[in-house]
Image (tube, rainbow, N blue to C red; front, side, top):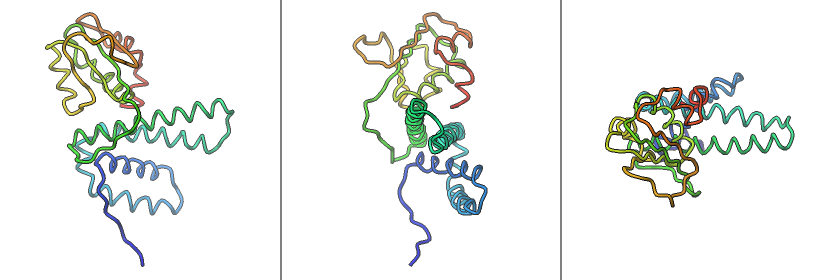
Length: 218
């Protein structure tokens, strides 16, 4: 007895994650196994195509992260490195799998998916303090970048952050608060912007990130 296919309830983020992995396999597998990959990819794309278009930026980020994990796993399987480098790459792979999980849930939140994946570890938060009205455009990319690295991004600001708030209205992991942050709160990182206007270069410098790092994930 053979089974053509099994339909299981999964979140949209999980399904899109699977689709990006199949796309990466198509790009890397050159022998007859590629036929099976193409069949599965086309079946998923037929159902997921509209969602991919709607969440294109997150789809691209998911594929970038899965591409990095694929490359890291290839290096680990080769085993052609010393113990210290092997351990460092294992840790890096774990970190990128955490990012992968966060992107899946961002897709779920944006799409209003009834199913959402959850992890059992402690939530890691980063605090961003903006003392005056920000230039929204230059803040969006680095804030989104850090929302991939941490489970929660807390943005401490005033009523003037409406434009920035609108940019992340579909992402409940990016939380806006008015007033002064509690000193007792536990944050893994903290970034402060004490003046009203910052150039794009100043913003990246304070965030301790460069354009190359942003493009790796966004």
